[in-house]
Image (cartoon, rainbow, N blue to C red):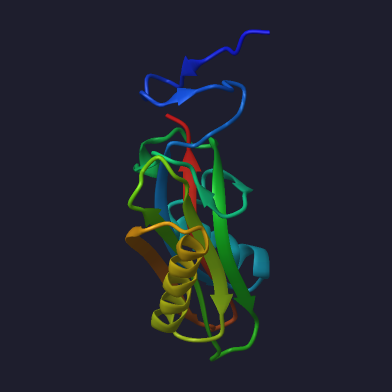
Length: 173
């Protein structure tokens, strides 16, 4: 049986398995929200992050080789996006909650990067530093030289029911 090799969407990246979904664009987003109900607070956080009008499919923590930054607001609303998502909700007024994500980019762009996501009861700065360290460790565990670490975090002090979220959104162009 011959191996069918194609180029995905003119991306220049050769895919030996064209039926597999291998994202080639990504964007880091974060947001917070507060509302009387948990789901509404989370929806407000998604909307604040610019991700509220997309269908998110949670994935594990690998950034495909050759992925490049993109801009999610250029995509059609309702699109299905892959996401490494960290989120936290609380109904304790005054509590500080945070969510963060990080992306570890290897120096060798033919290798996969790593995505790390988490949620905490601490400041955004603390959450972000924890996730940056996780990405460093993830690349080091794979024996990969680090080119860069990207990260984003959101912090929220709960008023009614609060939510904080951060995500790496990925899609195919």
